[in-house]
Each structure stands twice: as structure tokens, then as C-alpha cells.
Length: 172
Image (cartoon, rainbow, N blue to C red; front, side):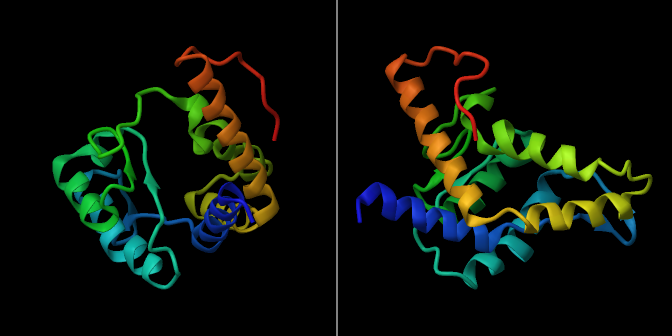
């Protein structure tokens, strides 16, 4: 098996086994995610879940939201992932506004939104109930296509020396 295919299979398995939806609330009240809450979610939910899977070589990527890039958050993530952290202010710096290269942006939000809002949920509980099965129904084959698309996007950006991508050049 090629190294690329091995990495792809490993990542696909890790993503499939770890995709979970976390809804943060405080004593029944929905709250905004800030640095403290984000770190608590990572510490109390995400890292314990990682420890239940064979993902010692997992890379972690996040966007540049302030709660994600606070010094204490980056330190926590570096302690967990070492040099396998892709983030603003992380060991592998991720360019801002790089939605062409982020699977959550170019795939997941649009895909999930169309399904989650199909029945026009009127309450947060209903919205959460819609999100869970949409995420759970993402299969390894779909993740493999997303990863293939992602590597094609990286190749395009590398070859074009960082030029913006045409609006639609890859399909999932």
C-alpha cells in the first residue's frame, strides 16, 4: 500500500471514529464558545475520546477564531499534538480565510446545513436532534473522497504558488 493511501486510510478511520457533535450549554442555557469553554471541551470531551482510539499520529487543524488561538488554547493543543497542530499561532501556521483548503468550510457546513435545516427546526433541541444523525451518517467512503479532494486542492495551491482557486474546480 502506498504511503499516501496508508495515511488516507488512517485519517479516514480516525475521522469516522471521532466525528461527534458537542453541544455546549451551561445548566440548561446555551452559551457562546469562548477560550475557557473551548479548552474545557477539548480537555473534558475531545482528548478523552481521542484516548479511546488508536490515533497517536493524528494531526489537529482548527480555524483562526480567537477562542481557538488564545495562548492557553495553543499551549494545550501543543501539549496534546506537539508539532501536529495546524492553526494560526501553531507549529504549522494556517493561512487566514483559507476556506478553499479547509474541509469543514468547503464541504461539511454546506452539506450538513442543507440536511439539518430541511425540516426547518424551530428549537435548539430540534436543531441538535437534526445535527446528530447527519454527522453520524457520514461514511468512510465520503471521507475518502473529501480527503482526495483536499489533497487535490493542496496540490493546486502549491502549483499556483498560493493563487486563489477558481470558484468550482473540484467536485465531491
